[in-house]
Length: 181
Image 1 (cartoon, helix red, strand yellow):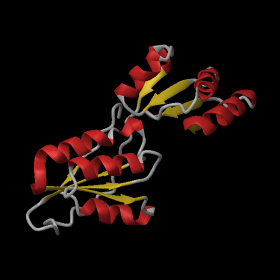
Image 2 (cartoon, one colour):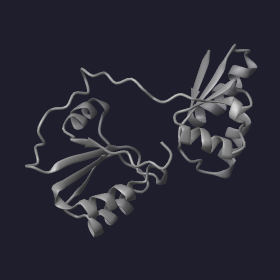
Image 3 (cartoon, helix red, strand yellow):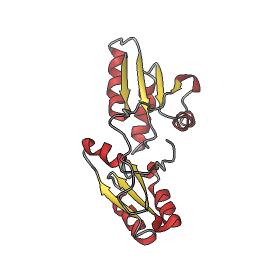
Image 4 (cartoon, one colour):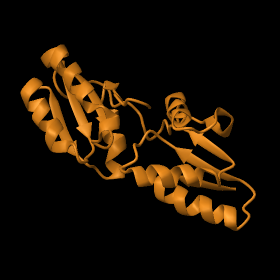
């Protein structure tokens, strides 16, 4: 069994798996948007070599169907499994009585961080929002936060994987505003 994940792995792995006669070629897909029409076409062609496309959510399955893939070729397989010994709440928030809300992800359109900023602006200073991640929209989103929620949204940039459990343990609420996840 060969499982590919996202564009490069799909384009190379699915094709080689098909050519090498691998028994089952499965292609995992999330909501990441294609960066060009050429990548969309290459992905569509590569999916032909897959026995099954694994969508990480029902919304991604719908997105794939809208892109022309038959429902019968798609299985929804949510990402699951959390090590509860590693990811354990730390207890009371370190920011006085403010509710600490956090999110982790690439700063790209599909992640919809403008919704997080709008939410922060509406909820006010009783909530502190923290975003870990980086990407092409960072400057734009930081400017939006300065304009609409200057005291309540902090961007921390990318963090090494070993710092993520600590970041998550300090949150009261995890908020993932993605459009399709």
